[in-house]
Length: 225
Image (cartoon, rainbow, N blue to C red):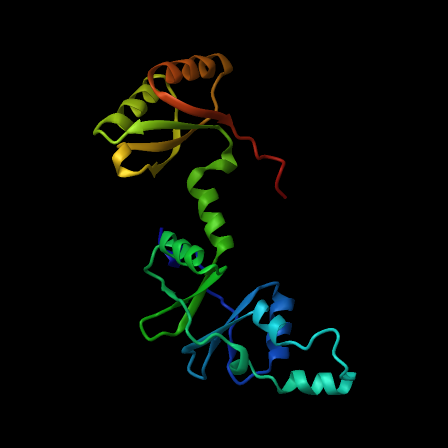
């Protein structure tokens, strides 16, 4: 899954010479939490988050009057508070890589740049959630099962063959590997819903022939707006 297919291409940016007040207003008006900062040629030079603005703003306990406060805030420029060493990704990087970078660095979004370091988009944790929803097929409901399988060749094929032979339609397959010394992996399979009797028979068969960790019916229809 490439970032170019999931990022927000129409990214809102700001030049480094603009005021902090302008950055705060842009984020509030567009309900976003970060702004890539660019120079006059669109080259990425930094990033500002709502946390940066909060930390740079005067305390509510300030003794400044309204005019002094407004003047102070208008004098603070984006370049004074932005993070200059920006972690970025490219359009050809994977969403998985972006997710790892965000998790490792405890950030919620990454600017996307081209080969000239021009900002061409942004990808956020919300986009990663959308990918997860899309690839799992959870919006279509169905049955989600988790199995513990060995890493030996053919272990997953045996499960898929059994599902096929029992007329189950697979929607998605995800795998999580255990430590190498255990030679095991967890496999998560989602299938379309079936007739109750056939489904009960399928579950009993899966449980008897494989190490079934869980079996859950997902129904999200009507829970989202």
